[in-house]
Amino acid sequence: MKTKPLVESTIERLIDYIIKNDLEPLQKLPTELELASLLSVGRSTVREAVKALVGRNILEVRQGAGTFMARQRLGVSTDPLGLTFVKNKRKLIKDLLEVRMMIEPRIAALAALAATQEDITVIHALRKEIEELISSGEDHTQKDIEFHMKIAESSNNIVLPTLTPAIQQAISLFVDVTNRTLRTETIETHRAISDAIEAHNPIAAHDAMTLHIVYNRTHIANLFKNTAFQEGDK
Amino acid sequence: MKTKPLVESTIERLIDYIIKNDLEPLQKLPTELELASLLSVGRSTVREAVKALVGRNILEVRQGAGTFMARQRLGVSTDPLGLTFVKNKRKLIKDLLEVRMMIEPRIAALAALAATQEDITVIHALRKEIEELISSGEDHTQKDIEFHMKIAESSNNIVLPTLTPAIQQAISLFVDVTNRTLRTETIETHRAISDAIEAHNPIAAHDAMTLHIVYNRTHIANLFKNTAFQEGDK
Image 1: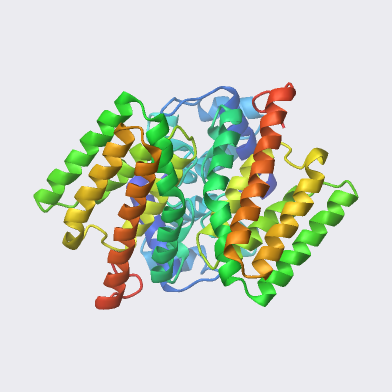
Image 2: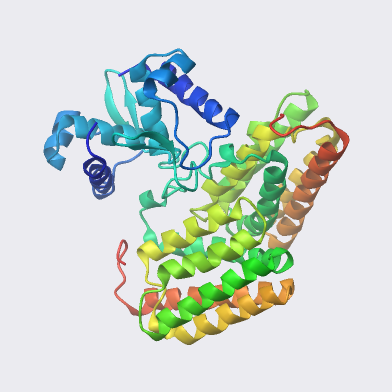
């Protein structure tokens, strides 16, 4: 193994190389040999640096094909906030809902101001897909995350579409928020949110999203109260 | 190099091992040989998995001493939201300030409700340190981030102390927000925030933080307008 400073400076220079050359998701990188020459280090140092960037979801190595830029969410790991390691899961979920309450109503308001006709079409399509999944009794967790992520994308803010799914994904890991008791409330508040965004009404969107999160929060609070929910349980 | 699925399943099992054994920051892990036996894989697979977790700031390898849990912010990389790769830095800074405006006033309000006497002492100490740095014309960027992080910690929310420094650090990477034009405003709004938290007044804390971020936002907007600020410039 190389000494740490050389590998670390190679990691930084490799990131600089990616930025300066404007590499896009899925684009192929030069070979290990070419990178070694470009960065004036040995091949084993390049290999270490590449592995570190794979771990950070910046690069991916495909056996026999070479090294490529990651597919999506460059540099964002599956658990960017390190929530896997929080021990008290009940407290974590409560705190994640507190963060959702801080950001999502305002995201909905921004989306109502900025959403294009295309965004609105996608939001309604996702809403309908979720309604169908609910009707047929299927799990709508992932579609629900997509719905909220699409609203965040429609807010025309670069940071929010990374932030909101990370938070929602973490909540869904530890608790089933798609309980049948919330079927009507989910359908109604999703409709109110989508309609307000379509009407470009930020205040209605803000209020509808607030109500949506309050329903979720109350549902989860009841779940904690009424069931033998244990830390770490799903 | 091992095939991807084996390394990936080893990474997952290594994370499970860390969680089940409740390993704390800086705690030493078993040797590579012991881990290989515990996880029933070869040593080279263990080595690959360990490297991946080093890249995600979960483990650190010290030459000659072994593998340890990372020092702090377990599983949170230096750039958890992948902001390094956003090309339009002006838009990024504007959007980061939008996120700060969403979360920080409410964080200050929560801190006013939950801060302990100890928290309040630290907040005032950091505020004074910043005032001294400003008076002597020194850079107070890092202390400023600590001040806001301490407020987030005082909010008694697990997620926020990871979120706020990531955002503030990203802003400070690309623009100097500690410009001398903001000296008086920074000192005054920091005092108002600290005093409101000490008085356990969430509304005053919320408003003081809002004003603080508005000053920052206006300052940065003027910077963009008046100077030859280029994308990627500091």
